[in-house]
Image 1 (spheres, rainbow, N blue to C red):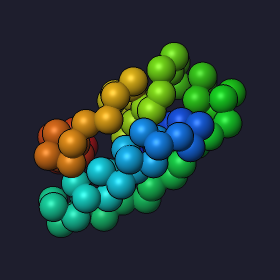
Image 2: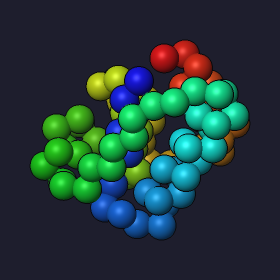
Image 3: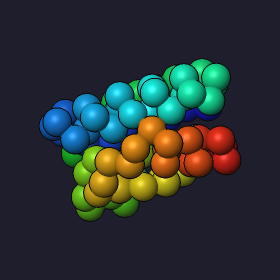
Image 4: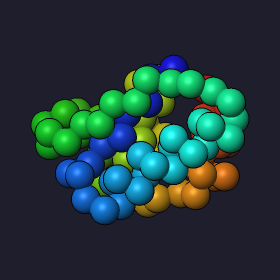
Length: 78
């Protein structure tokens, strides 16, 4: 699984990355996590609001920071 955290590197973007790591740990899963901060890369996914999360090249959320428990639902479905 490849997970991409899209954002400028702001507090919420960093929190999303931390919550993804916690959710993966809770699920006992591993994944490659990439952080994309270049706006042209972010826009290529059709994101207009950050932070955003892409799992295996599918945009699963944008504009909010879900809890690790909420993220588990996105990650276990992948």
